[in-house]
Image 1 (cartoon, helix red, strand yellow):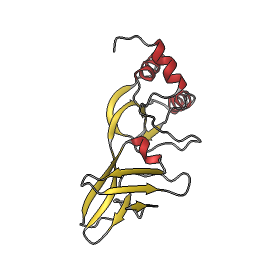
Image 2 (cartoon, rainbow, N blue to C red):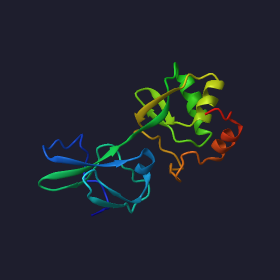
Image 3 (cartoon, one colour):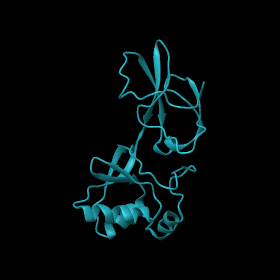
Length: 169
């Protein structure tokens, strides 16, 4: 089955049909071309033609008389911070964005994919990061889309921090 666009979202479409989920990692939601299997083994090829199309939690890819195929974004380890003021929010977002790391804003919290060097750096400059398992859903729009290359630690900043980090973990 080839999917070129979404046809709705589960939040808008509450039919009583069976839902077969296509599980995606947070960084897969921005990929324009990919091939995956749903939980029930249905082969799905996603081929978005337009730039900037993103898959979101609950997006419906297919619907027939019996079932719906919809997106489920998997939980992942993340750094979660709750800024105490607008100044702190702006500062933490600027510092993270300056490192070209994907940033998410959800429920008045700042989230980013977990990387121990970034966690330590945020602690060292005075923020109070927490490690939590969450769904990263509300990616801030940027000029550069996140992507994975087998390891999430693919930025030059992350590589430098990993070389400088203690080897106790």
